[in-house]
Length: 292
Ligand SMILES: C[S@@+](CC[C@H](N)C(=O)[O-])C[C@H]1O[C@@H](n2cnc3c(N)ncnc32)[C@H](O)[C@@H]1O
Image 1 (tube, rainbow, N blue to C red):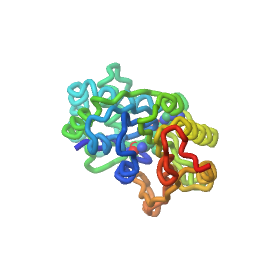
Image 2 (cartoon, protein in one colour):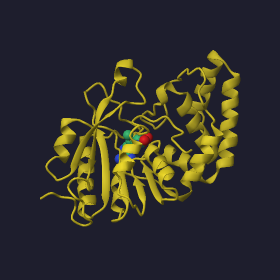
Image 3 (cartoon, rainbow, N blue to C red):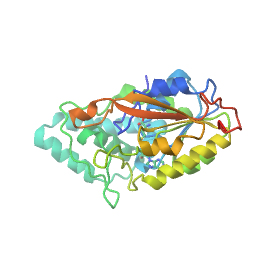
Image 4 (cartoon, rainbow, N blue to C red):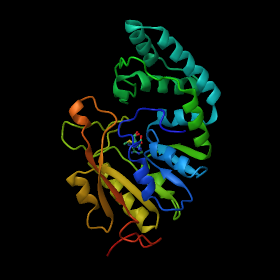
């Protein structure tokens, strides 16, 4: 069964069935402009196999990895199996040294770059993705005892699920402009931090700040006006409540435990906000889902 093969901050594995249940019964295309590890995409493919999809993300290495997985599974398997075998045969300091050697490497072929991307994701500290000012991945080694680096069965299932997916490195706004009535768009942006210190929202060189949250709200408004069914998730923060309240959308709070968090206390369920433009307000194609 296909499910995320990467650890990803904000991964939606636990919310996927809720989001899928909220989706309209028919969708011409599933569109995910903040794809990340693709938990909802894989859930859609399982529930409704063969649904055409458009997956996009601003993280170029991530989208290249998906593309290689879709188109060059055998080459990816070979490269990743070699890295996994070397890591498994090493211990302690050797493992660290190997991690930092792979981190500093710049493979020439897409398959080797994708294998490097997955290897670093599975062995780095907490599965984080963070880059320095010049775009170099700079997360330290994670020291998991027995990390699952190469899961051939899972990669094969994910590759099969991706066969009808179009993949794009892009900002969310342009992707949403391409959505048409009949498509279903799920938006899972980097979250509005719940406190000044508690957040991790950087997956690319550019942070996702207040201006982006506002741009996203305007994009959601545009989708709604054009009759495109959309669901958006974010942290249950007053700023987000303020951006989406009073516009006729359904706002629902759901408990969600975070997959990636180093502190035990941080693993307590954190309320998340799900916002849709077609639920209680009675979305009708073209009316924008507005109550007024
Ligand atoms: C919360 S994560 C998505 C998690 C995903 N739903 C999952 O289940 O793994 C947010 C994603 O947005 C991407 N991102 C950040 N800024 C973006 C932008 N301006 N346009 C598109 N994607 C962006 C990040 O690279 C990251 O993968």
